[in-house]
Image (cartoon, rainbow, N blue to C red; front, side):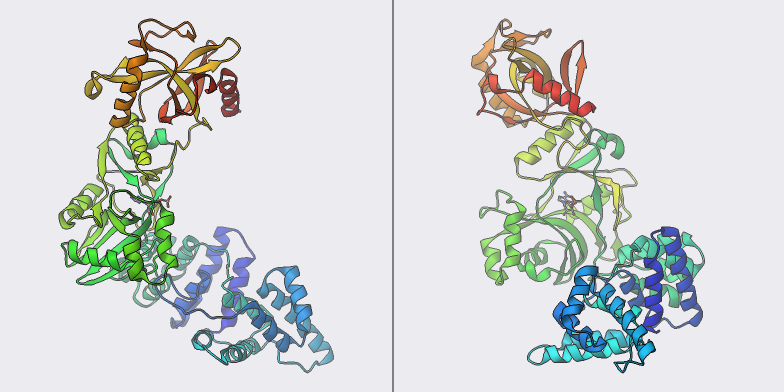
Length: 582
Ligand code: AMP
């Protein structure tokens, strides 16, 4: 196919922002291709529509063409000096657009004066030829390569019209964006090749399992929709990863259904691991093969995963030298900067925390519910310092959710992941659905700041917390009356250790009656000398009969650096209340 056809398509797509129009333009284009029966360049067309030279799972070497070289080529090609070209480029801000403007003007002049410059606008470039020339550009290295690249570039330009040159240069500079999302392209493909948009889900699923839309489209054109339906997961080819959504944390239980499981949201790098005998592939979140970065992870998988062939996912996290403490992502990213990976793997030890299993031997697991996938994962992993299972805990309430969240934060996790365990809790490849919900803070809460309160009372807990205080009464300060106003009852956010620590702290300051400085209608099991300051988060400040309160308060940390009179004041609470309401 001629590159000119594609340039026209790009131009048509660029001239609209309406999705339906784009689908229409695309499907008409594909229908025509279907009629010709020539699908040779179809994959390349799809990649270019996606603004790429190849799919994420294939490699195309760097072209190594700097803007300077493009200006040079453009200058020779058009007969306009480089300074002028640079000026136009600065004005337009895009090499492709600048080239088009320059060449269009030149063409006009040429037809008036019969200007004897290079032939501007032959429109004879074939897509296959474009690719083979680009490959030559990428391959030429070393001394003299700049001249070779320049020569090829000029050759390509001489076969292009101004419109084609615009897109040619955008392709070369990786700035081609025609504005159609993958979703839109898929709908265009479905309509163009199968006559109905309804097949888009089949195409999308195939793309999620084999993330090369060029391959999928070619298969569709050549073999039909049933062949696409039958696309299976292949070892060595990454699957598009399932992602998590974010919702207000109070909605998590109702969104997932109770019970659900919670896991730490670890602060490392997502890895999709394909084990095929002794061959290990590690794929990154954007589906690059990064096996070379983690030879130690490959080795631990080889030795401690009991399956011939399996696909699992997890988060690789930097650890301290005793493999006890998780270190933040910055530590892990140091690995990328070092060249000698073998040495670095000793310097920056890592652990892979596995959390999912997508395929086991010949059996796909992605359509099984999470508990079934997790069970198989537990069966095949032999845990050790460098390979563990992500801790997964079943919970039912907001209070337990908040407690787990706090524990996770205290131990250096970014937050938590809450995951559905219902019958339909499948692995949604390539999707940011609502079966996995992430929680990094009190998202969705109206309260935009933390509040410091002083503890003035405590109540004994029930159940597991019998015998220790389970709820604490927190107060804010009113400097105008020099008194502490009870504000909220804090019952969650602490680990058992923190609870014990608190118990020890409050024992010596227990009072049998309300201190004069405290204004309150409450009757706690014990009153406390206003001394211990803690920082809390919460959902929303409420007001009733002029007294303020906080919904869903959660302990965040001790504020030993603050005295009771340094805490949040009544005036500040009023301000926060105004802020959240307005
Ligand atoms: P985000 O990038 O904020 O959308 O969060 C999703 C990312 O969290 C995933 O791609 C993983 O890299 C990471 N992650 C950390 N812990 C987990 C976990 N337990 N389950 C799933 N993803 C996790």
